[in-house]
Length: 206
Image (cartoon, rainbow, N blue to C red; front, side):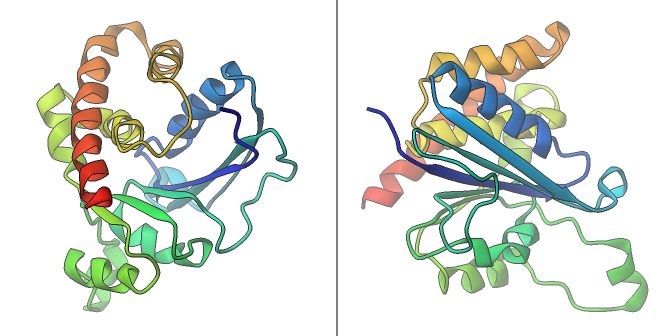
């Protein structure tokens, strides 16, 4: 079934593979025959700054930026970044959030309070009821390398049933865009993510 418009916002911090994840999904969407538009915003990404990558695809997609409130899925690799970008979400948005919080050094230096995962969850519940916290870093370590966390989250996305692209096309896109030497680790990471995503799907349907 062809989709007129699908909007995904992938957020995190520099070094987490946010842009690579959207490149993987963009290539997969192209292979499915969709029109694809992407954009990204980032500050000092290589120093752990905020990164947001926008993906839009479908049969009737034009501009690259997602209208505020119209995001289908927020895929957050760092939990507080989901809060930073909450205005792009609406009541029907699905939040898939890696439950890891990376506190900026400046917060420690100034002795400021930073929200914990419970406060982040409660805040986002005011935006959408579809909030799923994922132990993605832990699953990546189980796969063999913490750096495969972004692929774990892609597996969660597919397993949750919230992206209209075939599994084999996403897998092929992953393997085409990562080095051969880490294919086995990322294959396992993707499978572990899918398993967790299916649990999220059951939670969504309850």
